[in-house]
Image (cartoon, rainbow, N blue to C red; front, side, top):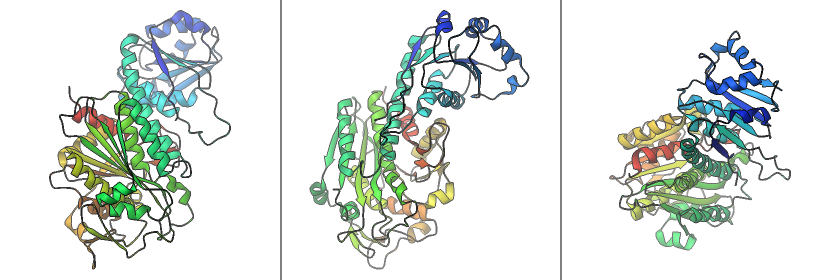
Length: 490
């Protein structure tokens, strides 16, 4: 798996900067005088930093912008990158600054010199997150980036915050690697094997195979995978860390490792992108890894339904009626509306077994949510204002776009079936909402619930601030923040 950059913190050793190789980055507030940590460097550079600070327009530069001075006098470094950042910069500004460093940095080492900075670990997180590169399928691997040294006051205290940031980056990278992986590599069996390895971090992992799923009555989930040679599975991951006196938060992920649409076959153009249809399961997996790495004092269970939706002589057909674990019957109108069939059984199982204090499902569920919200926001549907508002607050704090969408009886009525308890689709109008209404039928009255439709944000065609194009890992940071803010014990 892709490993984030290793960033070590050390106290200021300004004398060593003259012989540092690679690049040097110095953090400056463009509206303030030259700070103490930069004065020594400025003298070595024969006043170049001060001239830049006094130059026309420099004070107007925005937080997170970067100016490079190539081959500076008096230094062995190939460049000095001047990072514009106020001392009390917001977390988003600090992350933007770190991302700018990541895009500028070469393969040599990087030494970052900063004074007291409010969100120093966020700058480091931005650097780690934006330096991600997926090259697992290339024969020629990218050259490894050099070490990053963060020279700052109170390095010992900063080290602890860096460890937490690294845990978040590792969980996000796990998600990105899973979502980026091609379907012939990340089969249902390989996915389950990678999750089983989380046991090395203290996560309790259990894999439910098809015979057990049949015993449980997961007819909807099994119908999706019955056309594929890859066996359908449900993986249960439990992280307790001494918090098992509390009912768990349940995270449920759709894990369709490849989605052809089944008999309702998708068009050929763009079908290669359907390797990312396990994005919800990828996010759940990344969150569980982050919680384990940072030893979160929380009881969280992650459940993912792993299937492949293929057309074959054994595939489910439009017009079939399947029976869910809950016992409700579903008329399959469109076999390409398969994610909700996977989720409904896993959601019911999670509630039956764990009686969670809250349940959040994630899925690349509908193209309709992309029409509504584009690639900037995930769709948020909920039956509980308290849980929903807590999540929206966490998502905003982490800069992960999320927008609440409506639910209502009129949308639910679109799911009425002539021959079964419900249809699996409600027609073209409000497609993302009727999908959420379908899932709501499998939420017990006492369970606070959120459905996150991440079809537009799980994988994108252009770079974002913290990720190159491809898998983003959206949701790992927001859900980790939600757990920290609302579900951890003292």
